[in-house]
Length: 370
Ligand code: GTP
Ligand code: MG
View 1 (cartoon, rainbow, N blue to C red):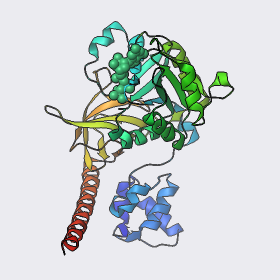
View 2: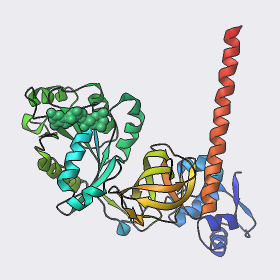
View 3: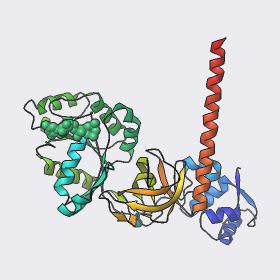
View 4: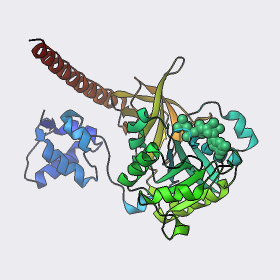
């Protein structure tokens, strides 16, 4: 439908119908609760409340109202930087993250690390930093492209004994496309054949000129294995983050991105969510792609149950109806019914697209047979 009932609209944006009717009157529209108004009109009114009708949602007509409003300056608070570790396969991304985590995780917490969720928050001298690991295999290109979008800083891991490789270049391109600052970690410096100068030389071909070569790219020599240069790297991350002045409003319905998701035998669909705005809480009604549900439980990166997660914090979320895709946006919506409705509309749309494609393929097949 291209229109919505005033009453329904009021309920969706959580405002009294009387207020909406008054606003309509000011716009020269006489209406009661049961009158239908166009989406354009609804959009205008939503704007007055600082509620932005989500673009993606709008395309799906019926799901016009997910509260993805822009936050006032005053509501913004400092949030931790989200740092994505990228680079060629086997250059040491996961090892580097492990080194960072273990140098900062206390004994008691270490025992609590039960599962690898590919996202961790560490405390560096009182400042939190969230790290995202990305798999190096080519098949994960799509996810990595999305990863860069959830990211404030990219750490480009290049093995000092191997140099710039195809997926190093791919990672550079993703970071550049997302306009994210790059910090280069020249890893495996402990190896006898490590050649950091060769790495710097090769990087110049992609517009990354090291600081000591007269450019502005921060290059930090490290060894994940021997734990060399880790503190230096962390210092650089904090420095770059400080310049960015990263903020978000923690006091609003949550919006986040699915980092990874899987079907767990005992627990059902489990999604790792990076909260980007607002605070996600147990009991919240949520949608992520075609999946919908209610936050039943949340587990942090140290395997502890938590009741809420604020901006830049990764958590495992239980309670979705099915496994969403990595890169799907998670929204907290007004209630369970709305969440289900949105999920079902999206699912229908997906189904229609699927059948449309299938039909086309078989038709082509038919012609090729003749
Ligand atoms: P993918 O996730 O498969 O892309 O790999 P990755 O980039 O996460 O690399 P990973 O951390 O799994 O390391 C790959 C191999 O390099 C492992 O055998 C590590 O032990 C080794 N390695 C990682 N860092 C270092 C290092 O600093 N020095 C040495 N000598 N070996 C390292
Ligand atoms: Mg890895």
